[in-house]
Structures are given as C-alpha cells and as structure tokens.
Length: 174
Image (cartoon, rainbow, N blue to C red; front, side, top):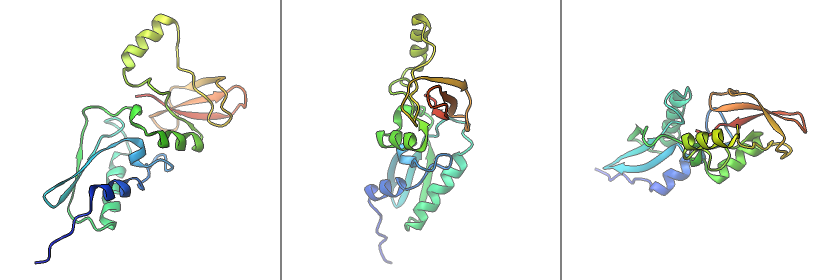
C-alpha cells in the first residue's frame, strides 16, 4: 500500500486564505478570522471554524466552500469542527482584511471596540458618547451618520457620509 503524503498545515492555511467569504467576496475566511485552527488527527485534516455569530446564514455555504477548496487540493479526509467559545469578534479580522473591506466600500470595525463591548457601552453611556466615529470608506470623512442598525447583512449597519453624501455599510463590532 502506498503511503499518502499529507499537505503541510502552512499549505492548508494558504489554501484557505484563497477561500472568499460568501457575503463579502473580497475578504477571505482567514482574513475574516473565522478559521481558528488547522491540524491533523492521524490522516484526517481537521479545520476548526468559529462562525461570526451562531445564527449566521452563510455558515453552511462557508463549510461547503472550505470542503470544496480542500478537496480540489487533494485532501481526501476532512473534518470540520465548529468552535463557539471563545465567540468570534471583529477584533479577529486581519489588518489586510480591514483594508480589503475599506477598498470594497465597507467601513471596517473601529479598532478595539469589540474586545469588551459591555464595558465599552457602559463607558459610552457614562461619558455621553453614543457611537464610535465611523469614517467614510469612500472619502475618509468622519462626518457620518447611522441610518439603520441593520445593513445589507446582519453583521453590518447602514451609514451615510454627510460630506460626499454616499451611503455605505459599516461592519459592526461584535
């Protein structure tokens, strides 16, 4: 019987970095920060995924896309594991992913606002601040206003720039 050569985990990470998010195709699943681990259990590749939130409608498609991409690379034995704890946070989006979101016209999450959201909300309430400053991804202006807490997908809010008057999505901090 011929021995099966397994790919390196480095190769697998690179392959997964080419799998786009189904809702925002300019950002990869790795850039989004939902691929938590890649490891082998004997000859089975185990990919651990943390969904952006437990009710994310794209989760099934994401799993299918991962399976398809890895099978196309020759991975025969694959197991996807779902990890809910710790919960995904927008702080896990890579700096490259944030730049890709901005170039695509989506304002990336404000740095550091998701780590301890409950504390942030209490501090904001006490200080009188209602929202973090969101810069327009098109012109860079911070003269923006929230139109709706809900945008084109559940993880985004709708904003409008009061300088260039363009609407845009803001990737909400979770």
